[in-house]
Length: 473
Image 1: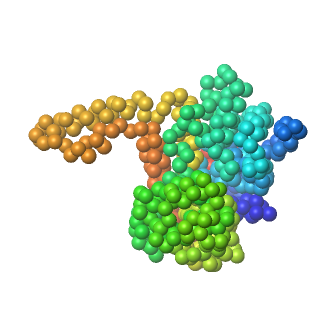
Image 2: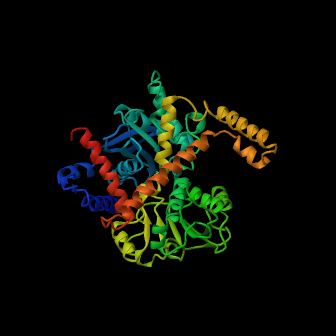
Image 3: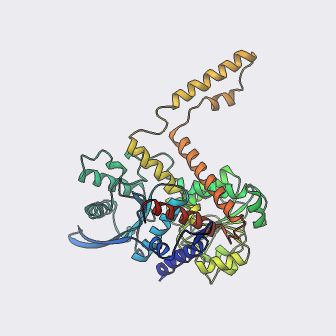
């Protein structure tokens, strides 16, 4: 099964990293027994519940896996999909542990899922199912602002998070922090500006950090900077769309191929991503859009500078890895490259920017949202006007001293205080940039680290071990 291979790939990557952590400075740092404890999921809960719909009772199966609670609350999305199973949820929960540790977000790792085909149900039916699922999770504290905080994933979004938060609040009417039980909510329900596009924007910041690093870019055989880079995007969901959109409009990269379930769009001159997304949303398909071809996964093998797999896991595997031509692959999805494919691509000299770093923008901004909910105040509310007043006074002083007017365009931008979205973007970029610098430094160190994935995993696991040690384990 694909989920078995996905979990195996994460475990293989973990084991590659632990070889470098067995001893540090001549002293035992990560013995095998502790490594085994960290690698395994702490607990996986299976819930089965009935919901009366359409005149009869339907039974649904859901999962919530807690991989590590070295920090609480544990954090991880909930996906709605017919292919959800226990192994997949446990693999995703493990990835969340390492992801949070890598970007220094103080959460443990968790993940959840519900076996459901969302296309078979009307919105009001999905709401009823989601509220019942929330009730089952709440009974076991598998949704709680201080213990277990879900977020959106495949098949879920702001709407489902709003339903879950409202149901938890209804079950806990005296809990002041009830809205912090999930992240990824609509802004008008305790969400945070910038969360919707956070993972995609994080992918853009990750690529920017790579392409500004002289040493690392040289290894790829490409030139510095994102301008003019030709990009293949697989999956035009939330993550793929925003990554492609920001790269094209802010960095002047060229999106030449977009792969979706029913085919692909190819335009060597560059695809208008906003137009394509609008067409997909309106029609439910990319068929009929300019440049459509009835090709599928084989488009991953087309020539480009950057490949962004932003759909599901294991789309690059041992059978197609040899034919991948892109110089840089950034894992916008979780686990899109199998461990066997990873070895093949590394032998070919391809650079892989790994998922536990590349798509960490979502959990980073989820952390900001959680903090906002606990503080019960919008980011920037206290200081924005003070910033504007301070900068305005400074500019007036400069004008008075020089006898010249400050350029109007610069003046209007300079005196504008930081909004919540500005602060979120700033915090996200800082996180992605600093994290990449740490990964790159280790990759280029004297320890002969083979790739970015191993370097990132070493940093993550080392931080988990340190957390366990501080707990006396």
